[in-house]
Image 1 (cartoon, rainbow, N blue to C red):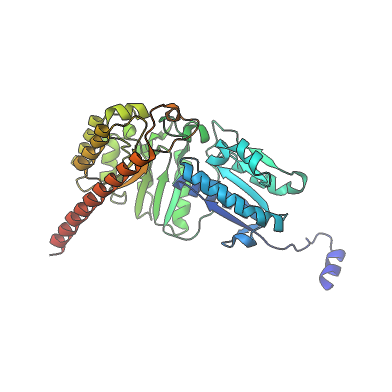
Image 2 (image 1 turned 135 degrees about the horizontal axis):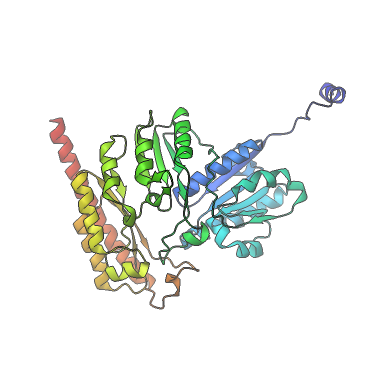
Length: 399
């Protein structure tokens, strides 16, 4: 009563409102993790607070992935489960953002009419407008791709930890025939070196000691101020950074200068994620990977010549359309030659809208599963051998 009287006597005072909370669930790659941190920072500015309890949230955003079919299925199931929560809390703001929102907007609008917001990866700046005009709009949809959006002037809202993800570019120009990213995230565009350095410095001030530079093809970074090697060298010189990583590079854009920059600075981790995808030249060509098996092996030789103890990891797709048994065996042979320290291995998953989905010679699920199991067993054996080598080397150093 006294509080209401005080407000009546002083109209400039704001009426207290209950605190509002947001919940973000992230699917897919590290870029989505970073984007969720950007969304969190916008919601914070709108007066919302993060919560780990989805049932207590006033706003729920699912940051989605469209790379693999399984990720889409998971999101659809989650949305089905959230429908009952939406019925209980009609005022709940339910949003779907990210690559799946970009790729499947029409399907979501038709099958999930209770979704309030659908935003593509280039539309996150609209969130404050949506929050402020919530009462005057029933639904909000914006999945337009931008030629310029890189969120250069925004800082993500990070939780306490060791590693800070820092997006340095967005989009992709490679157009691998199996990948939907160029259609969901648009063409490549890079942030300025100064803005990236500014974000890194702020992250260090906040207590983060490890920085991971992110991009769909992170080493395709290009600006008038320099390329990826220039950026990496300048970031390495920032005080307070103990470790620097980057992901994911494309083999086509790795050159000797980049490897020498890595070797020059002790805070740049001796690890390169080097996606092979296939050991067959014909399949690589079908994938539009722009390199051959020989070029890939030559690149591995160059890396290990300059950084002998460099850890190499990779991505592999087995059962790509038209892949024969002999071509799969070529992949196994490359694994044996390179001895990757670890690998991310997947069965080919057809994505509507990609060129590969139109091939007529798709491989059966049974064959794909058998090949995947064979590759996983080989990689486990290689990883064990590589770990044993490092163990023996460390023992000799200690002794």
